[in-house]
Image (cartoon, rainbow over all chains, first blue to last red; front, top):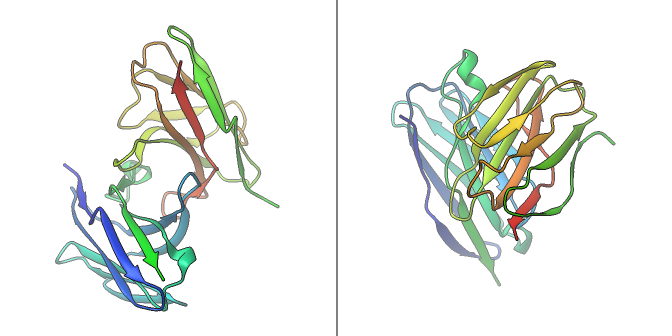
Length: 113
Length: 112
């Protein structure tokens, strides 16, 4: 089976740093995506990790540990516009099933002044 | 600009009625997808298509149908067999399963 866990909600202060965790138990693993989704809008791509380690992209970084089934998204210098839901998604296999991403329920981040 | 266009933004269905959600992309992507999003739930895959004239069921295909007659278009029909159709529907595309998804702006479907 496929299971992805993320915290439901988080609150952080403008200018601070926040870490959003994602743990997964899937039948296989061939990559993990993070997407950002503002309310009522389309998700937009943030990062993709397939190997262990940290990927940095501006204010956003994503970390993966395949042995622990764990990833996190790190947001630095938080801005009000970062208030959104953050979706973790795992690609379980590299074959035909690789089209079927498994998404977590998303973490709703509220940034307060 | 390239992108994915979904229409309509809001749609209402009467009991026993079939409705069709439109999805068009000009990104020249081979793969297209339909997801359903319910409050407090993750995105769930309804159908996907790897290439023209081919499509596969996702996790929750019952009560839905699709077609892929053109590379650019992947319409979704919500049939009367879908007893709980109220949800936010997202269409997406990608060059391949290893690549990121590009999403449309979504259609909110409600039942009258």
